[in-house]
Length: 125
Image (cartoon, rainbow, N blue to C red; front, side, top):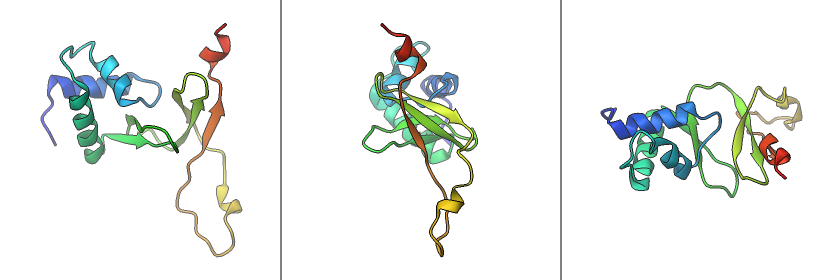
């Protein structure tokens, strides 16, 4: 494990404080409040290191840049707003998907992403 620099602590705090997965640029903006000299290169290096260590997990949506969230949040899915492009956590699961698996196959994992408009975009004029 790498040592806990001010930048690393700021990046982890930014991801932990977010209620949704963050893009590297969003991590930079949030973490810069406590680490003003932080650069995007340092954010990318730190995100890779934290992911390799298992402290954060990547959230990859098809055709989208990778976002990051804290590890250990339990099984959940995501909602992507078509207007603001932000991704939000959806707690829980849709249910027993094993019933959809063809005979003779074994389900090992699944990902469900919902798409629509977030509450903030729906309220916008």
